[in-house]
Each structure stands twice: as C-alpha cells, then as structure tokens.
Image 1: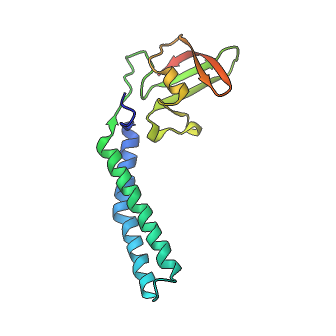
Image 2: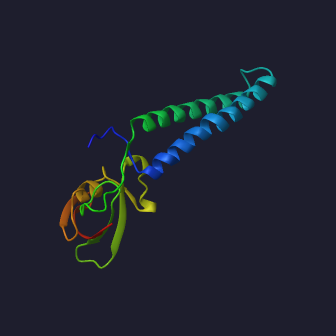
Image 3: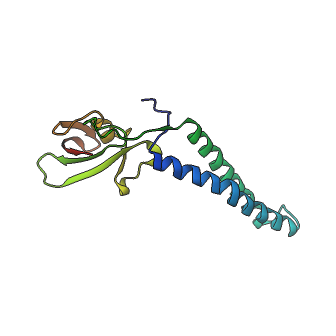
Length: 156
C-alpha cells in the first residue's frame, strides 16, 4: 500500500467532508467577522484581537487545505467480510500469548487511528503485523519493550 495515500473508511471520509464544509461556510465567516471587528478597534500594530483573528484565519485555511488534499487523494476502503484475513476495515480480536485478556481493534488508515476508540493504524507496528493474518494465526512483532507474540482469535 502507498504510505502517502490516505486510506479512509466511508464513515471517516464523510466526517472529513462535513468538517471541510463547516470550515468553509461557517468558520471562515466567523473569522472574517472577527477580523472586521478587530480592524474597527484602530491601530493594528498593538491590536491583540486582530492578531488573534489573523492566527485563527491562518489555522483554518491550513486545515482547509489539508482536508482538501486528503479528500482529493483518499482511497475509500470497505472491509471485505468474505476475505477471512485482516485488512483495512477489519475488526480483529487478538490475545497476547500466555494471557487471558483479549483486545479488539479495527484496522484503519493513519488519518482515523485512535487507540482509545480501538482504531489501530495499519502502519503501526501491531497493525503491520496483523495485516494479512487469518483466524488462528500466531504472530510476533517488535515493540520498544521487546518481541510480543499474539494470536488472532476472531476477524469480523
């Protein structure tokens, strides 16, 4: 897979499109109004409100540019439930060797990875190790604390 390519689930793609639309239609207008108000206060060289509004405008425009690029180049992936192997979009349950706790993760692109939500990037060490594995496979991968061995319990 191309590492510069943004792989997104259909849900994340729609979420990013909504954020982009909100930034373009609502936030741009709000910042423009803040800039207009700050200009009306007079001397721009010592005007904190003006500088703050300019910084906000810059941040919004940067985010808009980023989102436009991601959306333009995004590859939408939907999990193929018939495949039987771990891929983008898969929900996989794994168990560490010699432990009883099980962990479930959804394999996603780096744009939507969030370990607190159980969304694991396919580019992370664990994500890379899981790609292509089938139910019952035992695999080992390197972590900062040494090699870890897991077993794939279930793929959804």
